[in-house]
Length: 157
Image (tube, rainbow, N blue to C red; front, side, top):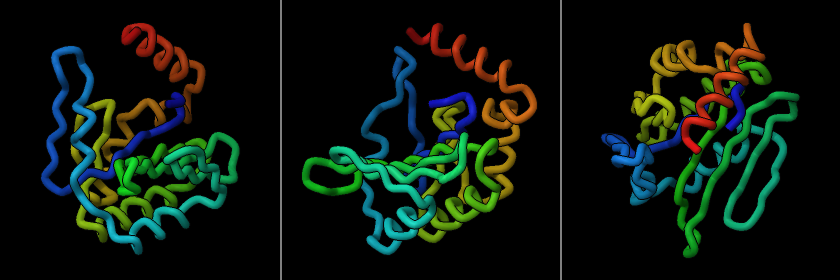
């Protein structure tokens, strides 16, 4: 994930992902809920450029430093996860608002991996989380945000 991305997972309502002792999240917290095809179609139409590989559908912004949305599929074709990496340096807040509205209509919530927060699909809650995120700091201090991201990566490895 780039320093300019605010990563949001779509999760079932009432999810409370937990970190293991090693600091990683349980990979299975995203599984076990269905998304209607109409919801998936709305996600697919959010960003214009399709770039799929294997069991992953990826949709990218047409803008430099833009957002992307990925839909991961299980072996049997079911959706395993939906994740958006919103880029405030590239895309308007309207892209994020539309994503949040789709999540709300699907009856789901949003999970911020970097903080462990589960957010209600309300613009105010998502904007508050974004304002405290490195992707937002990237707007005013790109070099500092990139160095912070590199430092975080080095601590994990």
